[in-house]
Length: 419
Ligand code: GLA
Image (tube, rainbow, N blue to C red; front, side, top):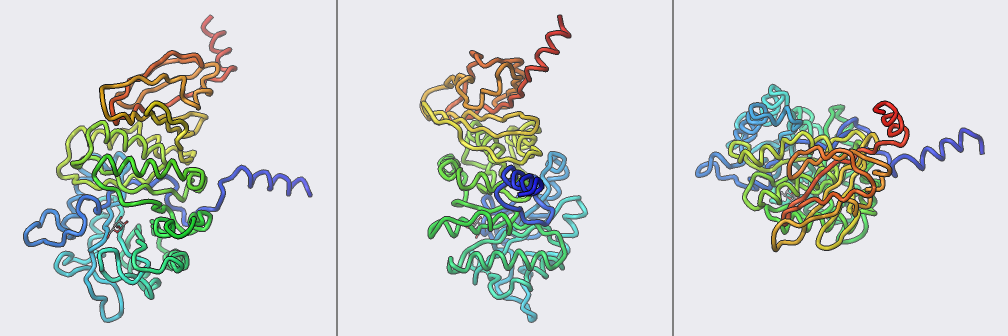
């Protein structure tokens, strides 16, 4: 073996398990808004014009995204989910938007969203019909990819309903190629593994080569039980899923439901913290026209978003579970670490967690700097391996912090400088 071969071999050991879909997109977890959880398949524009799936809804969300600081915080994609199309394809076999609810058509809507400096996402399905029964793309992959490109769409969420599971891989790969062939940059959001898990363990190498993110587990609901079930699933399968995440391709635990009805503020903080730790796409599904200031502030918290968007691009994982606490850690750039401590005891008041019990706390040997981000921002200063720091965490809440190691050399230099 030549030195070069040896070097290449070593390098391949260091790099992520698989190549990402090479379309230059989703180098960081996608940020934006997606209609499904909050607005579902509401097509009744006669009696509920403000909440029905119509061009007005996305235009208003785009307006809010610019006006209310969402765009500035990093949220970029305004995404349509199911129930947008007409039940019939046009004479050329192309999908068309429901003419009553989208009188201007999708191209006009894309122009509008682009004029605000944002991007537009659309939804389709790999099978015969979408999950809500609208026309599916089976047999039309190239036509539909070209239609979306002609409309200047920037993201496709491709669902997996109504197709035999053995055909899923073929369908998702064909659509990925069809999108690529259009020459337009279209971020490709898949649900391939979700629909395959009931039958066998998905091939995450192939999925990462095909998609920019992929749903693994059930749809999120506006409830704490739903958030907990997603976290549980993610931790149970982390050995399989975490290595497949990285720049260009991410595991997608589904939408942020912060700002709706079902989560207490502590639970909203938990979702935000853990979605950042999981390097998850941050796709909000809420009503940006009517959102409480605390939820807004949480969703726009720049320190949490910084963790989500960290350039190292490694997904975090659950590192400990004890005494009804879970510890989740995410390695960050510059040898830093993000740590979330989730209190799962839903009785009683705030409970303390000794920070030196965090498995990754070894980076604090000899010293580290700690910044608390949730439940409130606080510089906690220099800590050591033996730190006695105890953090109080509310029931179903999360303490989120970053740990920055102070190297021995730096410690010595620092000691010399100050003495
Ligand atoms: C599936 C998906 C959801 C949503 C609906 C739409 O359930 O997982 O995210 O897109 O279909 O019908």
